[in-house]
Image (spheres, rainbow over the protein chains, first blue to last red):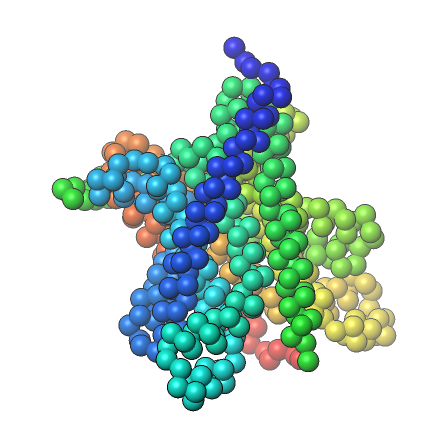
Length: 218
Length: 223
């Protein structure tokens, strides 16, 4: 029996937005912590941490997100953690986001004029004070626009979690499509919902980028 | 951890992996070529076309850039047949990748076109060149050269994104992996090897792109 595509079916898809947002939030929060660590390692004065962080970034930027999801999903099982789409998707997207945010933020840290760092040395500030009170606050200002831009990429990336069985917006669309067989309407609706989430963020990122460009013009 | 990694089933199916790798390479280069053509046309329309064309290009770019590729390929492969447009999986994959990379490349190439100084175009007009000649010789060539690094990193990202086409049973590298793991259950090993192949592909692509840059753009950038 084929179900008609009605209000309840559409509502099921709309409700699944919460899981897309939840997964995005987890990955973004985890990725922020990991990204900060990667960025700090990348600008470290010691060679080994710098190369390790670079290797991590190259590895995650040089392989597909889908494979990263599969490897974490099946890898967790090997390590006896069982098969759990929530854990696997959160972990894989966190590792992924750490690499990308780390690389974005490294650029932002390096964009802070080196005189700032030198001045804090001259004032006798240690590493922690120098980063916390001088370099990172200035880097954060530069980082906002590209970070929001990456958030859009991350939200779109969570759709791949549907392939390992995580029920979010895309998977909800597939489930409804399998019952109603009206793919044009179903995937059209899913696309519109993603667009409604992502487009305002894209516009925000672009607006902030322009405002920042004006603010730093000389 | 009492699990022995066993790579034997992966290497027993190595010809399968090679075939998948070739499809991934074909899809990637096909989409790069077609996507660049789409993008040059769209960027030309966006920078020099009438208002309705500019709106259409804007709509295309924003829709594609703000929806996941997975949904785009589902829409093209499962949704479009409702309108009587039917593709085989590999064709649908090529179409979806082209549409996707076309939108990103449009934005990149548009930025390149806008970086061309007005005086260059005016000089072309003064020399009596036709609009198409100005675009061909004065605008697009240096524009593409300026945005070449951004464009090629988008292409590498495209190659990685192409792994998603395995979900509509296209026969790319990721699909070869799905196939082997469903027969051998050596899931982790299979995807480990495949991830390694993708890594090699992306390193090779970036090497190829910088080689092309050195051979094709060995004249100084005009400022």
